[in-house]
Amino acid sequence: MNDPDTSLWKKRWHFNFKELKDALDKSEKECFDLKRMNELIFALGSIAIAFLKIPTFFNKTRHVSESFSQSLLFTSFLESFRNSHHTVFLSGCGMYKNAYHNIRYALEFLVQSYYIDKKYPNDSFPTKVEALTRIENNYKYQGRRLVNKLRLCATLKKEIKKEYSKLSKKVHSTHKQFENTAYNFMDIDYHSVYVDCNEVTNIYKSMITVYDLFFLLIITIFPEIRQSLLENKEFMETIKTHNLTLSLRTLFD
Image (cartoon, rainbow, N blue to C red; front, side, top):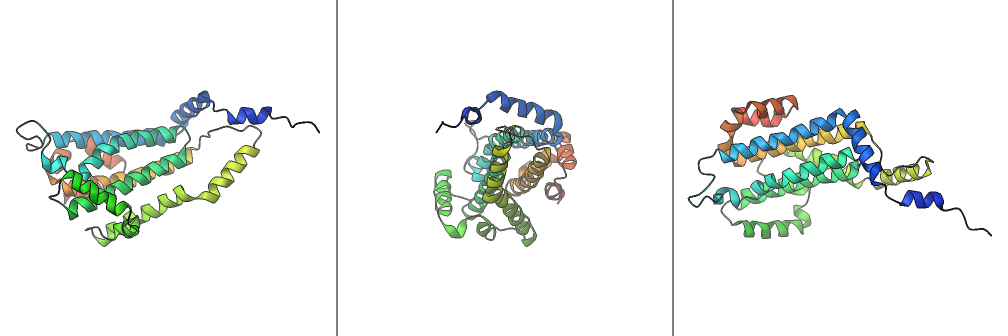
């Protein structure tokens, strides 16, 4: 019995970096919402400027004051820069499930950080990290269960849990992933990555929701940045263009 021809399989198992670049080029040309996702990241820069304008942001030794440096939510703001860039890159390369996973992670560290900052407002950063470790390993403080413990209105909690459910389905949809993989491998013109602009749009919508919640919570914890943001025309235009309604409501309250 002759051995089967494995040439096609060898081709399929080899990752082609050019294919990844081609997908990114195609996404940039065809997926309009990829550009809009990038625009959202610029809003983070406005938040950074607003912090720098606070007279008490730096102490006498020119270090960041403890009210900011010891906050997990402030650290989650710094983390969001890296997380957002990764999400846009993954979306452009056709790695949509990974992008959803990134957004869900962003929502999770946002919720955890807000909860701990409110519960232990005067504790040091290392102590808060210890608290974070405890709740990460406690079933009662995971996902939507932790949302129920937040000191927020019922409507806002409902909005956060709704987004949690939506992202969890995207991240944990094993059967759909299996179906897609099987279909792709049966396709004679198999490619490692595909471009789906509809999926990019869905990721963009999830980013809007998480950004909106993030801005709302960070303004709630640090109301000192509100006036600076209101005076920042580029920031205000961005959140209006992308319809960040919760952020707008919080700024004008």
